[in-house]
Length: 118
Image (cartoon, rainbow, N blue to C red; front, side, top):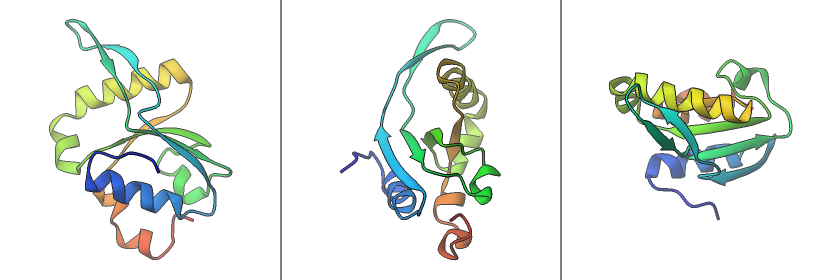
């Protein structure tokens, strides 16, 4: 079982594990340094998701075969967008894989229930 820290993270894990292309997911897989404009900090994304293939529906959201995920409520992301984006950019630079925010708008959306991301 993959550990999670919130119900939104739990729902994300439930969603991705149901995808036919799901391979594996790791919790808090890496920690990377990032500069906030004043000092160096450390950042650990919530998950590393691996897929066997990436459906076009997921490519639109920035997914690749290996993708780092930060699960955030949309309101929290919008309120801290600059800092979160800087952290995700640091992950992408360190790993050469995309790092994206996944919010409840994706995790709990009607399209998910209709299978449009498979």
